[in-house]
Image (cartoon, one colour):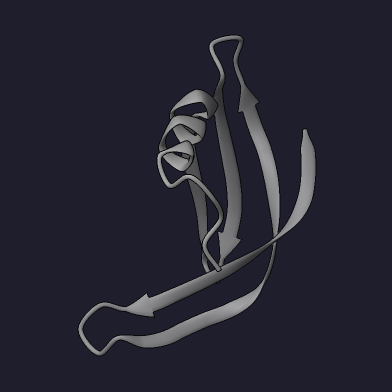
Length: 69
């Protein structure tokens, strides 16, 4: 499907050390009429998938009232 550039950061929970900080190619693997989207990317030796509803993301982000940097 569709691919675009993103950025991946991972951390060790116990030591709070950064493990990965690099660009990543993100693929949209599924997009449904109900607004569910599934994204996939490769993290070293693993294929990772993230599925969420876009309206849930927008609702959650709008609660912050702005963008934090």
